[in-house]
Amino acid sequence: MSRSVFVGFKGDGFWAYDVVSSTYLGFLTSAANVLATDKQQYWLEEAVRAWHINMEISDYGLHLDEDWSESQLETVRELCRFAIKKIRGADTILWSDIEMWPILPVRRGHDSIPSEPVAGFGEAIIALLEGKLAQPPTGHWWFYTLDDKVDLIERATL
Image (tube, rainbow, N blue to C red; front, side, top):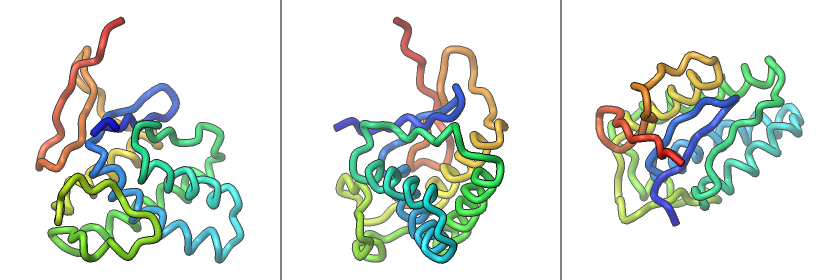
């Protein structure tokens, strides 16, 4: 199992440490489950199922649905903002606080993770969905880790 996951949307994307991605998706799916059930938004239920798979198996990558309508994209962006706000409610995300989730994120031995890199990952998803993700230097991808800064990794050449 890889320790990194590619997040892609409409030909653009970035990479992330799978712990960051799967933890964020846990917060995102918690927010989405409420909305999907309350408003019977079946497209969102389908997205949540895919996000649950990505929480457990990062090797698939996180590919955001390119067929979402503008209103669906806005819903996802709002859910992302809600998740970010929840994440930033504490400086650290403790495993003991999330081990009750129905689907557990990738842990890799971490008992806690800093909140800010996870929230920054969520902001990158919003930027990606809006077509506003800053372009990395030529020949590189952004890479979101548990550090306070976003790293760069080289793009593989075939």
